[in-house]
Image (cartoon, rainbow, N blue to C red):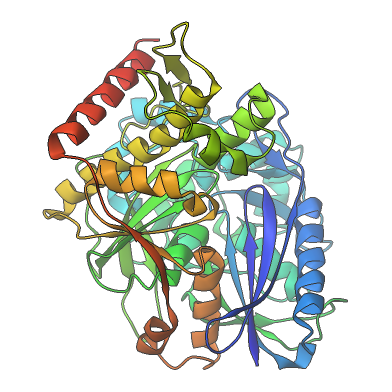
Length: 494
Protein backbone atom coordinates (compact mmCIF):
# COMPACT_ATOMS: atom_id res chain seq x y z
CA UNK A 1 0.00 0.00 0.00
CA UNK A 2 1.03 3.61 -0.59
CA UNK A 3 0.35 7.16 0.56
CA UNK A 4 -0.01 10.06 -1.87
CA UNK A 5 0.88 13.64 -0.92
CA UNK A 6 -0.36 16.63 -2.90
CA UNK A 7 1.88 19.66 -2.34
CA UNK A 8 0.15 22.66 -3.90
CA UNK A 9 2.76 25.42 -3.83
CA UNK A 10 3.07 29.02 -4.94
CA UNK A 11 4.68 28.35 -8.31
CA UNK A 12 3.64 24.77 -8.98
CA UNK A 13 2.19 21.49 -7.75
CA UNK A 14 4.10 18.37 -6.73
CA UNK A 15 2.56 14.95 -6.10
CA UNK A 16 4.64 12.33 -4.27
CA UNK A 17 4.04 8.62 -3.73
CA UNK A 18 5.52 7.12 -0.53
CA UNK A 19 5.82 3.52 0.59
CA UNK A 20 5.54 2.20 4.13
CA UNK A 21 9.24 2.67 4.77
CA UNK A 22 8.90 6.38 4.01
CA UNK A 23 10.70 5.94 0.71
CA UNK A 24 9.85 8.12 -2.27
CA UNK A 25 8.47 5.82 -4.96
CA UNK A 26 7.62 8.51 -7.51
CA UNK A 27 7.21 12.25 -7.85
CA UNK A 28 5.73 14.56 -10.48
CA UNK A 29 5.83 18.35 -10.59
CA UNK A 30 4.26 21.00 -12.78
CA UNK A 31 4.53 24.79 -12.75
CA UNK A 32 1.61 27.06 -13.61
CA UNK A 33 1.31 30.76 -14.53
CA UNK A 34 1.72 33.61 -12.06
CA UNK A 35 -0.59 36.60 -12.64
CA UNK A 36 0.48 40.16 -11.77
CA UNK A 37 -2.46 42.48 -12.62
CA UNK A 38 -0.89 45.54 -10.95
CA UNK A 39 2.35 46.31 -9.09
CA UNK A 40 2.26 44.41 -5.79
CA UNK A 41 -0.74 42.29 -6.82
CA UNK A 42 -0.33 38.52 -7.23
CA UNK A 43 -3.03 36.10 -8.41
CA UNK A 44 -3.49 32.53 -9.64
CA UNK A 45 -6.19 31.12 -11.85
CA UNK A 46 -7.85 28.41 -9.68
CA UNK A 47 -8.47 26.30 -12.78
CA UNK A 48 -4.72 26.33 -13.51
CA UNK A 49 -4.12 25.07 -9.97
CA UNK A 50 -6.71 22.31 -10.29
CA UNK A 51 -5.38 21.18 -13.70
CA UNK A 52 -1.85 21.01 -12.27
CA UNK A 53 -3.12 18.79 -9.42
CA UNK A 54 -4.92 16.38 -11.78
CA UNK A 55 -1.94 16.27 -14.14
CA UNK A 56 0.65 15.58 -11.44
CA UNK A 57 -1.59 12.98 -9.78
CA UNK A 58 -1.86 11.14 -13.09
CA UNK A 59 1.87 11.40 -13.80
CA UNK A 60 2.97 10.28 -10.32
CA UNK A 61 0.67 7.26 -10.25
CA UNK A 62 1.79 6.23 -13.75
CA UNK A 63 5.45 6.70 -12.83
CA UNK A 64 5.07 4.65 -9.63
CA UNK A 65 3.34 1.91 -11.63
CA UNK A 66 0.88 1.27 -8.83
CA UNK A 67 -2.72 0.19 -8.95
CA UNK A 68 -5.02 2.99 -7.68
CA UNK A 69 -6.72 0.59 -5.24
CA UNK A 70 -3.36 0.31 -3.43
CA UNK A 71 -3.50 3.97 -2.38
CA UNK A 72 -4.26 3.90 1.35
CA UNK A 73 -4.80 7.64 1.70
CA UNK A 74 -4.07 11.13 0.44
CA UNK A 75 -2.49 14.07 2.26
CA UNK A 76 -2.75 17.71 1.18
CA UNK A 77 -0.34 20.53 1.93
CA UNK A 78 -0.58 23.97 0.44
CA UNK A 79 0.48 27.58 0.10
CA UNK A 80 -1.29 28.81 3.18
CA UNK A 81 -2.80 32.31 3.13
CA UNK A 82 -3.83 32.22 -0.55
CA UNK A 83 -7.64 32.27 -0.81
CA UNK A 84 -10.40 31.39 -3.26
CA UNK A 85 -14.11 32.24 -3.18
CA UNK A 86 -16.31 30.04 -5.37
CA UNK A 87 -19.92 29.29 -6.28
CA UNK A 88 -21.37 26.64 -3.99
CA UNK A 89 -23.40 24.98 -6.76
CA UNK A 90 -21.16 25.20 -9.82
CA UNK A 91 -17.73 25.30 -8.19
CA UNK A 92 -16.79 28.24 -10.42
CA UNK A 93 -14.48 30.76 -8.69
CA UNK A 94 -15.92 34.29 -8.62
CA UNK A 95 -12.41 35.77 -8.82
CA UNK A 96 -8.85 34.55 -9.19
CA UNK A 97 -7.07 33.18 -6.13
CA UNK A 98 -5.42 36.06 -4.26
CA UNK A 99 -1.93 34.87 -3.37
CA UNK A 100 -0.22 35.23 0.01
CA UNK A 101 2.38 37.54 -1.59
CA UNK A 102 -0.30 40.02 -2.75
CA UNK A 103 -0.15 43.49 -1.14
CA UNK A 104 -3.44 44.96 -2.44
CA UNK A 105 -5.01 45.21 1.01
CA UNK A 106 -2.17 47.21 2.53
CA UNK A 107 -4.25 50.39 2.91
CA UNK A 108 -6.98 48.53 4.79
CA UNK A 109 -4.37 46.90 7.05
CA UNK A 110 -2.93 50.34 7.81
CA UNK A 111 -6.43 51.49 8.83
CA UNK A 112 -6.65 48.60 11.30
CA UNK A 113 -3.32 49.61 12.80
CA UNK A 114 -4.49 53.22 13.17
CA UNK A 115 -7.59 51.96 14.95
CA UNK A 116 -5.20 50.38 17.48
CA UNK A 117 -6.47 46.86 16.80
CA UNK A 118 -3.03 45.23 16.54
CA UNK A 119 -2.93 44.01 20.16
CA UNK A 120 -6.44 42.55 20.06
CA UNK A 121 -5.75 40.74 16.79
CA UNK A 122 -2.38 39.44 17.99
CA UNK A 123 -3.92 38.17 21.24
CA UNK A 124 -6.63 36.25 19.40
CA UNK A 125 -4.66 35.02 16.38
CA UNK A 126 -0.93 35.19 17.16
CA UNK A 127 -0.49 37.22 13.97
CA UNK A 128 0.59 40.75 13.07
CA UNK A 129 -1.64 42.94 10.91
CA UNK A 130 -0.39 42.49 7.37
CA UNK A 131 -1.80 41.97 3.85
CA UNK A 132 -0.08 38.56 3.97
CA UNK A 133 -2.96 36.88 5.79
CA UNK A 134 -6.26 35.70 4.31
CA UNK A 135 -8.94 37.76 6.07
CA UNK A 136 -8.33 41.06 4.28
CA UNK A 137 -8.12 39.18 0.96
CA UNK A 138 -11.55 37.55 1.45
CA UNK A 139 -12.95 40.94 2.45
CA UNK A 140 -11.50 42.48 -0.73
CA UNK A 141 -13.15 39.85 -2.96
CA UNK A 142 -16.54 40.23 -1.27
CA UNK A 143 -16.36 44.02 -1.59
CA UNK A 144 -14.98 44.27 -5.12
CA UNK A 145 -16.74 41.50 -7.06
CA UNK A 146 -20.20 42.61 -8.08
CA UNK A 147 -22.93 40.96 -5.99
CA UNK A 148 -20.46 38.88 -3.99
CA UNK A 149 -21.38 40.24 -0.56
CA UNK A 150 -25.08 39.61 -1.13
CA UNK A 151 -24.43 36.10 -2.47
CA UNK A 152 -22.15 35.31 0.47
CA UNK A 153 -24.82 36.36 2.97
CA UNK A 154 -27.36 34.26 1.08
CA UNK A 155 -25.14 31.18 1.45
CA UNK A 156 -24.46 30.87 -2.29
CA UNK A 157 -20.68 31.12 -2.00
CA UNK A 158 -17.91 29.18 -0.29
CA UNK A 159 -14.45 30.39 0.66
CA UNK A 160 -11.26 28.77 1.76
CA UNK A 161 -7.54 28.42 1.51
CA UNK A 162 -6.13 26.16 -1.21
CA UNK A 163 -6.40 22.98 0.88
CA UNK A 164 -10.12 23.59 1.31
CA UNK A 165 -10.66 24.24 -2.40
CA UNK A 166 -8.77 21.09 -3.41
CA UNK A 167 -10.58 18.97 -0.82
CA UNK A 168 -13.92 20.28 -2.07
CA UNK A 169 -13.06 19.34 -5.66
CA UNK A 170 -11.47 16.00 -4.81
CA UNK A 171 -14.63 14.99 -2.95
CA UNK A 172 -16.98 16.17 -5.68
CA UNK A 173 -18.20 19.08 -3.58
CA UNK A 174 -19.13 16.99 -0.54
CA UNK A 175 -16.46 18.18 1.93
CA UNK A 176 -15.89 21.83 2.90
CA UNK A 177 -13.25 21.59 5.63
CA UNK A 178 -9.82 22.81 6.66
CA UNK A 179 -7.38 21.99 9.44
CA UNK A 180 -6.20 24.10 12.38
CA UNK A 181 -2.84 24.95 10.80
CA UNK A 182 -4.40 26.55 7.73
CA UNK A 183 -7.23 28.18 9.67
CA UNK A 184 -4.69 29.80 11.98
CA UNK A 185 -3.25 31.70 8.99
CA UNK A 186 -6.50 33.35 7.97
CA UNK A 187 -6.58 35.89 10.86
CA UNK A 188 -10.14 34.69 11.50
CA UNK A 189 -9.47 31.76 13.86
CA UNK A 190 -9.00 32.18 17.59
CA UNK A 191 -5.71 30.37 18.13
CA UNK A 192 -6.62 29.37 21.69
CA UNK A 193 -10.05 27.87 21.00
CA UNK A 194 -9.36 26.57 17.50
CA UNK A 195 -12.66 28.05 16.29
CA UNK A 196 -13.69 30.92 14.04
CA UNK A 197 -13.82 34.11 16.10
CA UNK A 198 -17.04 36.15 16.02
CA UNK A 199 -15.28 39.48 16.66
CA UNK A 200 -12.81 38.92 13.83
CA UNK A 201 -15.51 37.77 11.41
CA UNK A 202 -17.38 40.99 12.12
CA UNK A 203 -14.26 43.14 11.77
CA UNK A 204 -13.35 41.68 8.37
CA UNK A 205 -17.02 41.40 7.26
CA UNK A 206 -16.77 37.69 6.48
CA UNK A 207 -19.94 35.58 7.01
CA UNK A 208 -19.07 32.39 8.87
CA UNK A 209 -21.39 30.36 6.62
CA UNK A 210 -18.94 30.68 3.69
CA UNK A 211 -16.03 29.31 5.73
CA UNK A 212 -15.09 25.62 6.13
CA UNK A 213 -15.34 23.70 9.37
CA UNK A 214 -12.04 23.48 11.30
CA UNK A 215 -10.74 19.95 11.90
CA UNK A 216 -7.72 18.09 13.27
CA UNK A 217 -4.73 17.86 10.91
CA UNK A 218 -4.94 14.06 10.76
CA UNK A 219 -8.09 12.02 10.25
CA UNK A 220 -10.63 11.55 7.49
CA UNK A 221 -11.67 14.79 5.75
CA UNK A 222 -13.61 13.09 2.96
CA UNK A 223 -13.22 10.57 0.15
CA UNK A 224 -12.43 10.92 -3.53
CA UNK A 225 -15.44 11.18 -5.79
CA UNK A 226 -16.08 11.62 -9.53
CA UNK A 227 -12.44 11.98 -10.59
CA UNK A 228 -10.98 10.58 -13.81
CA UNK A 229 -7.50 10.14 -12.31
CA UNK A 230 -8.54 8.33 -9.11
CA UNK A 231 -11.25 5.83 -8.14
CA UNK A 232 -13.98 6.83 -5.70
CA UNK A 233 -13.52 6.16 -2.01
CA UNK A 234 -9.86 6.96 -1.32
CA UNK A 235 -9.72 8.83 2.02
CA UNK A 236 -8.15 12.29 2.21
CA UNK A 237 -6.74 11.83 5.71
CA UNK A 238 -4.19 14.58 6.36
CA UNK A 239 -4.08 18.34 5.78
CA UNK A 240 -1.58 20.96 6.93
CA UNK A 241 -0.26 24.27 5.66
CA UNK A 242 3.07 23.89 3.90
CA UNK A 243 5.32 25.17 6.68
CA UNK A 244 3.58 23.23 9.43
CA UNK A 245 3.69 20.13 7.22
CA UNK A 246 7.44 20.62 6.82
CA UNK A 247 7.85 20.87 10.61
CA UNK A 248 5.95 17.59 10.94
CA UNK A 249 7.87 16.03 8.04
CA UNK A 250 11.14 16.92 9.76
CA UNK A 251 9.85 15.02 12.83
CA UNK A 252 10.20 18.13 15.00
CA UNK A 253 7.78 16.64 17.50
CA UNK A 254 9.53 17.88 20.68
CA UNK A 255 9.49 21.35 22.22
CA UNK A 256 12.50 23.38 21.03
CA UNK A 257 13.00 21.50 17.75
CA UNK A 258 13.06 23.74 14.67
CA UNK A 259 13.23 23.63 10.90
CA UNK A 260 13.78 26.07 8.06
CA UNK A 261 12.21 25.51 4.65
CA UNK A 262 13.89 27.15 1.69
CA UNK A 263 11.24 27.74 -0.95
CA UNK A 264 9.88 30.84 -2.69
CA UNK A 265 10.29 32.41 0.76
CA UNK A 266 12.12 30.90 3.72
CA UNK A 267 10.25 29.92 6.84
CA UNK A 268 11.60 29.05 10.27
CA UNK A 269 9.28 27.21 12.65
CA UNK A 270 10.01 26.25 16.25
CA UNK A 271 7.85 23.74 18.12
CA UNK A 272 6.64 25.28 21.41
CA UNK A 273 4.43 22.34 22.41
CA UNK A 274 0.96 22.94 23.86
CA UNK A 275 1.89 26.49 24.88
CA UNK A 276 1.14 29.36 22.50
CA UNK A 277 4.13 31.63 23.21
CA UNK A 278 3.47 35.30 22.49
CA UNK A 279 6.48 36.72 20.69
CA UNK A 280 8.10 39.92 21.94
CA UNK A 281 10.10 40.19 18.71
CA UNK A 282 7.46 40.34 15.96
CA UNK A 283 7.38 36.61 15.28
CA UNK A 284 4.10 34.82 14.66
CA UNK A 285 2.41 32.34 16.96
CA UNK A 286 0.78 29.68 14.83
CA UNK A 287 -1.04 26.37 15.19
CA UNK A 288 1.43 23.69 14.13
CA UNK A 289 -1.03 20.79 14.09
CA UNK A 290 -3.65 19.04 16.17
CA UNK A 291 -3.75 15.25 16.27
CA UNK A 292 -6.81 13.22 17.36
CA UNK A 293 -7.28 13.04 21.15
CA UNK A 294 -4.46 15.54 21.68
CA UNK A 295 -4.20 19.22 22.48
CA UNK A 296 -3.10 21.73 19.88
CA UNK A 297 0.62 21.87 19.16
CA UNK A 298 1.89 25.41 18.58
CA UNK A 299 4.92 26.94 16.91
CA UNK A 300 6.74 30.24 16.67
CA UNK A 301 7.27 31.27 13.08
CA UNK A 302 9.40 33.76 11.24
CA UNK A 303 9.29 34.08 7.49
CA UNK A 304 11.32 35.93 4.88
CA UNK A 305 9.02 36.62 1.93
CA UNK A 306 11.82 36.32 -0.64
CA UNK A 307 14.29 33.43 -0.57
CA UNK A 308 14.41 31.18 -3.64
CA UNK A 309 12.46 33.91 -5.43
CA UNK A 310 15.61 36.09 -5.25
CA UNK A 311 17.48 33.46 -7.27
CA UNK A 312 14.59 33.36 -9.75
CA UNK A 313 14.89 37.15 -10.05
CA UNK A 314 18.62 36.85 -10.86
CA UNK A 315 17.64 34.31 -13.54
CA UNK A 316 14.50 35.91 -15.01
CA UNK A 317 14.86 39.58 -14.10
CA UNK A 318 18.58 40.21 -14.53
CA UNK A 319 19.51 37.23 -16.70
CA UNK A 320 22.86 36.66 -14.94
CA UNK A 321 22.21 32.91 -14.64
CA UNK A 322 20.36 30.58 -17.03
CA UNK A 323 19.09 28.18 -14.37
CA UNK A 324 18.66 28.47 -10.61
CA UNK A 325 21.09 25.59 -10.02
CA UNK A 326 23.94 27.66 -11.48
CA UNK A 327 24.03 30.08 -8.55
CA UNK A 328 26.15 27.90 -6.27
CA UNK A 329 29.02 27.41 -8.72
CA UNK A 330 28.88 31.11 -9.67
CA UNK A 331 28.92 32.24 -6.02
CA UNK A 332 31.87 29.93 -5.28
CA UNK A 333 34.01 31.87 -7.76
CA UNK A 334 34.57 34.50 -5.03
CA UNK A 335 35.49 34.11 -1.36
CA UNK A 336 33.29 36.98 -0.19
CA UNK A 337 30.86 39.59 -1.52
CA UNK A 338 33.65 42.23 -1.25
CA UNK A 339 31.24 44.50 0.62
CA UNK A 340 28.22 44.00 -1.66
CA UNK A 341 24.94 43.61 0.24
CA UNK A 342 21.66 42.60 -1.37
CA UNK A 343 18.51 43.06 0.72
CA UNK A 344 15.88 41.13 -1.29
CA UNK A 345 12.84 43.09 -0.09
CA UNK A 346 11.16 42.56 -3.46
CA UNK A 347 7.72 42.20 -1.86
CA UNK A 348 8.41 43.96 1.44
CA UNK A 349 10.25 42.60 4.48
CA UNK A 350 8.76 39.92 6.70
CA UNK A 351 9.91 38.91 10.20
CA UNK A 352 11.21 40.42 12.36
CA UNK A 353 10.55 43.78 10.64
CA UNK A 354 7.14 43.56 8.94
CA UNK A 355 7.71 46.44 6.53
CA UNK A 356 5.28 45.77 3.65
CA UNK A 357 6.38 48.99 1.94
CA UNK A 358 10.10 48.06 1.93
CA UNK A 359 11.79 47.62 -1.43
CA UNK A 360 14.94 45.77 -2.46
CA UNK A 361 18.41 47.30 -2.20
CA UNK A 362 21.85 46.45 -3.55
CA UNK A 363 24.65 48.42 -1.94
CA UNK A 364 28.46 48.40 -1.83
CA UNK A 365 28.96 48.05 -5.60
CA UNK A 366 32.37 49.06 -7.01
CA UNK A 367 34.11 48.81 -10.39
CA UNK A 368 35.40 45.45 -9.24
CA UNK A 369 31.93 44.01 -8.58
CA UNK A 370 30.88 41.21 -10.94
CA UNK A 371 27.98 38.79 -11.20
CA UNK A 372 29.71 36.28 -8.89
CA UNK A 373 29.68 38.86 -6.08
CA UNK A 374 25.98 39.45 -6.63
CA UNK A 375 25.29 35.69 -6.67
CA UNK A 376 27.14 35.26 -3.37
CA UNK A 377 25.43 38.31 -1.86
CA UNK A 378 22.08 36.71 -2.76
CA UNK A 379 22.93 33.45 -0.96
CA UNK A 380 24.33 35.35 2.02
CA UNK A 381 21.15 37.44 2.22
CA UNK A 382 19.05 34.29 2.36
CA UNK A 383 21.15 32.98 5.26
CA UNK A 384 21.34 36.32 7.09
CA UNK A 385 17.57 36.85 6.99
CA UNK A 386 17.12 33.49 8.70
CA UNK A 387 19.87 34.20 11.24
CA UNK A 388 18.00 37.33 12.37
CA UNK A 389 14.78 35.37 12.73
CA UNK A 390 16.53 32.66 14.75
CA UNK A 391 18.03 35.23 17.13
CA UNK A 392 14.49 36.52 17.77
CA UNK A 393 13.19 32.98 18.33
CA UNK A 394 15.87 32.20 20.88
CA UNK A 395 15.02 35.37 22.79
CA UNK A 396 11.32 34.42 22.88
CA UNK A 397 12.08 30.83 23.88
CA UNK A 398 14.60 31.93 26.49
CA UNK A 399 17.31 29.49 25.42
CA UNK A 400 19.66 28.70 22.55
CA UNK A 401 18.68 26.12 19.96
CA UNK A 402 21.01 23.15 19.56
CA UNK A 403 20.51 22.57 15.84
CA UNK A 404 18.34 23.42 12.85
CA UNK A 405 16.82 21.02 10.34
CA UNK A 406 16.56 22.29 6.76
CA UNK A 407 14.52 21.34 3.73
CA UNK A 408 13.07 22.71 0.51
CA UNK A 409 14.60 23.06 -2.94
CA UNK A 410 17.39 25.49 -2.04
CA UNK A 411 18.58 23.30 0.84
CA UNK A 412 20.37 21.23 -1.84
CA UNK A 413 22.76 24.19 -2.19
CA UNK A 414 25.75 23.18 -0.04
CA UNK A 415 27.26 26.67 0.01
CA UNK A 416 24.00 28.16 1.26
CA UNK A 417 23.72 25.50 3.97
CA UNK A 418 27.30 26.18 5.11
CA UNK A 419 26.60 29.91 5.21
CA UNK A 420 23.44 29.19 7.21
CA UNK A 421 25.40 27.20 9.78
CA UNK A 422 28.11 29.87 9.95
CA UNK A 423 25.72 32.77 10.48
CA UNK A 424 23.54 30.91 12.98
CA UNK A 425 26.46 29.40 14.88
CA UNK A 426 24.89 25.95 15.09
CA UNK A 427 24.77 22.67 13.15
CA UNK A 428 22.41 22.55 10.18
CA UNK A 429 20.99 19.11 9.36
CA UNK A 430 19.61 18.16 5.94
CA UNK A 431 17.48 15.00 5.54
CA UNK A 432 17.73 12.55 2.67
CA UNK A 433 14.35 13.69 1.39
CA UNK A 434 14.33 17.50 1.24
CA UNK A 435 10.70 17.68 0.09
CA UNK A 436 9.55 17.47 3.70
CA UNK A 437 6.47 19.58 3.02
CA UNK A 438 5.10 16.64 1.03
CA UNK A 439 6.53 14.14 3.51
CA UNK A 440 4.71 15.84 6.39
CA UNK A 441 1.39 15.72 4.54
CA UNK A 442 2.00 12.04 3.83
CA UNK A 443 2.84 11.32 7.49
CA UNK A 444 -0.36 13.05 8.66
CA UNK A 445 -2.46 11.11 6.13
CA UNK A 446 -0.70 7.85 7.00
CA UNK A 447 -1.45 8.34 10.69
CA UNK A 448 -5.04 9.20 9.76
CA UNK A 449 -5.63 5.83 8.06
CA UNK A 450 -3.41 3.69 10.33
CA UNK A 451 -0.71 3.29 7.66
CA UNK A 452 1.76 4.29 10.39
CA UNK A 453 0.86 3.62 14.00
CA UNK A 454 2.39 6.54 15.87
CA UNK A 455 5.02 9.30 15.91
CA UNK A 456 7.82 6.99 17.06
CA UNK A 457 7.35 4.81 13.97
CA UNK A 458 7.64 7.92 11.79
CA UNK A 459 10.80 9.05 13.62
CA UNK A 460 12.44 5.73 12.78
CA UNK A 461 12.02 6.23 9.03
CA UNK A 462 13.37 9.82 8.94
CA UNK A 463 16.98 9.75 7.67
CA UNK A 464 19.79 12.31 7.65
CA UNK A 465 21.74 13.21 4.49
CA UNK A 466 24.37 15.70 5.70
CA UNK A 467 25.24 17.91 8.66
CA UNK A 468 26.92 21.30 8.25
CA UNK A 469 28.90 22.78 11.16
CA UNK A 470 29.87 26.41 11.69
CA UNK A 471 33.41 27.29 10.63
CA UNK A 472 33.61 30.94 11.68
CA UNK A 473 34.28 32.67 14.99
CA UNK A 474 31.60 34.41 17.01
CA UNK A 475 33.41 37.71 16.34
CA UNK A 476 33.28 37.16 12.55
CA UNK A 477 29.61 36.18 12.83
CA UNK A 478 28.79 39.32 14.79
CA UNK A 479 30.61 41.55 12.30
CA UNK A 480 28.78 39.96 9.37
CA UNK A 481 25.40 40.51 11.02
CA UNK A 482 26.29 44.12 11.76
CA UNK A 483 27.07 44.75 8.09
CA UNK A 484 23.73 43.18 7.14
CA UNK A 485 21.82 45.28 9.66
CA UNK A 486 23.48 48.44 8.28
CA UNK A 487 22.05 47.54 4.88
CA UNK A 488 18.60 47.00 6.45
CA UNK A 489 18.80 50.53 7.89
CA UNK A 490 19.44 51.85 4.39
CA UNK A 491 16.25 50.09 3.23
CA UNK A 492 14.36 51.84 6.03
CA UNK A 493 15.78 55.20 4.93
CA UNK A 494 14.58 54.83 1.32
